[in-house]
Image 1 (spheres, helix red, strand yellow):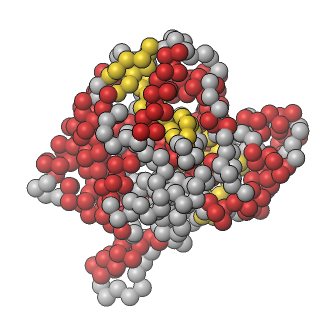
Image 2 (cartoon, rainbow, N blue to C red; image 1 turned 90 degrees about the vertical axis):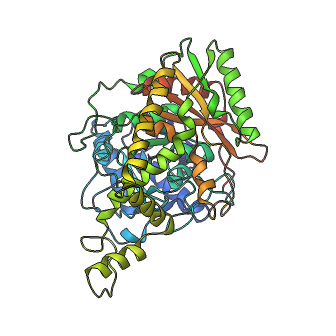
Image 3 (cartoon, one colour; image 1 turned 60 degrees about the vertical axis):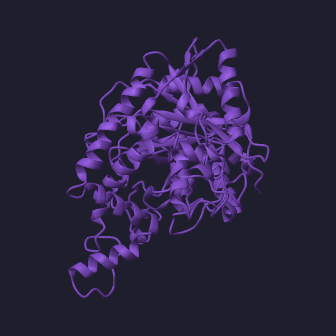
Length: 489
């Protein structure tokens, strides 16, 4: 039986553990075996410690035998994007800059996962410092899309999405700054959720753009997504942007039927540049919600056209500031033969950072520089406010928005690496949610004729994760897209 445990969802595994029909050790061993079988193709993992994972599983089994189970995540493996701090584990952000760095502490979400009894299972590949949309900016390896290894898995949380899709882990965590959870989830055919900004603590997440970054879950079912989200949310005094709000029982909320809802269809999101098969999947989803009794109304988000420009000013400005700490002095890569202090900074950063990270630091430093700050950064912040107001105005009329997650399905490796602008446009439908601070989830919405997954994006009101997950669960219950698995191994 253990060889097939890896094919089950986290909820199904939790049921088996609860009934005593399997052990966490058997479950964990099954995922270790699966990873060893397929990860030479997928290349989702940067590091894993078999002995440590099995020791955590054994501790979970002992708790359970004593009647001290910690809940639905106890004994369930959760894999982690390599920008989340776990004490004693590598924390490289897939960069040469942090190639030999080991985290000295646990991030808040890691502490919460440990409290929930989860088995922390491995470090996952990503675009360097979370900057990218294809996981091709990793200094270590290029992750493959499990549905077609010649294609990219999306990014920057490509390893997090691919590992769940390839059944190497039932759950994973990623981070989303401009679509880095939702876009790879869409391209790999799994569920990925970006919570409302401030709902999940960022303490222990290596910073890219602090006003945009959010940690969120990847899973193969909405129930599993709700379970993992439940474990990581909550106010944290260690994060000054963490928000105090009442946390509902997401797992219970998801089981409630979707009342007659009003679905908003932003007209700006179905414009030129969208793949015809993706557009068709969105239209089919619209019809499905209508058939269930929902009302679908067209809404306008008029400042959408400025979102990409605004994002790449604000995100790069914050990245320029956040990445200044990697100077070759305190920690991280240090150039071996500097002749003076300036030389040390220059060579350490030149050697340690990849091309995309350097591009963004240069761009961010430029927009923050004297004489350009008002023209770029300040103006971008004003337009960001207008983008948020667009959403809040739309939510006065609708319960949630339905859009494509990505304008195209997974594209071939190397197809966009020489064209940064084409790569940046991969996130055109996801960026606005980060600028506005609202929650978003990507759910499996169909397949192309060539067999690649298509994702649908649902966007909700601030802190209405429960309503968003309920809408996602309704769609999931009426379709079997989430049950399909890639033809690996």
